[in-house]
Length: 266
Ligand SMILES: [Zn+2]
Image (cartoon, rainbow, N blue to C red; front, side):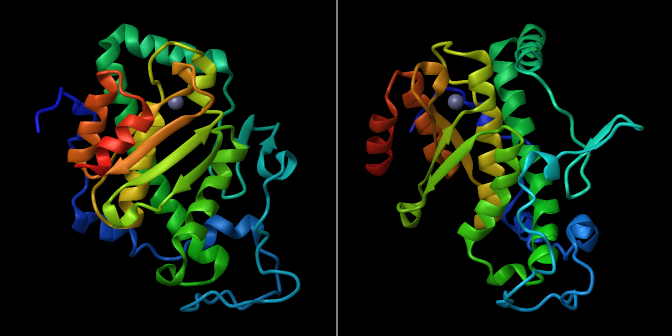
């Protein structure tokens, strides 16, 4: 079918399905969880499956409180998370200024494309470090972990760092359609009601993360947004043909409900 130009859904460096397999060969990264290690418990070996261990766990799995998650070093002026990654706190004004200056430099469609691609690369990078950490933290091989367990463990750090809460719907996965609802989008809440979808970072992020998890190259498009006056944002993750079609229908003014209906009839 013919669609409008939605080039942002086609990152040039989109990995092939074969490349996506590489992420699954990531080895357990013990260093990434060394700050959460409880000495003397467990043998630190990676098992084929997750073993139930009663009592105190080898690693602290729930560091999701401000004073545990954000590790300041006032002497160095640095901030790290419990996985040893450097972080930066920014205000909503920073977000608005960043998006505004991007648009001033490259125009609206260029800014959208860049945001999508940044989100996409962020997701790829994040999956690589996350899959290494996940195996170390749960002392188990990736292949035996349930996808919902992986997804919730992946999202938690994004939740506490202000990227919002989410809900995903895999009921149509057999038909190649996955849906995500996002509440309190950091981007949309910063810029407010603009009458257009704005969460291109997230669309790129979901595209690459779900590509890695499902081991095939997928795209994502935002169907409705807090910035179009809705109370939350909604995304569809699917193959590129359907994602391009969804972007086209959205540009024609279709609601999320209409887009989903049309996607089902493709
Ligand atoms: Zn949005």
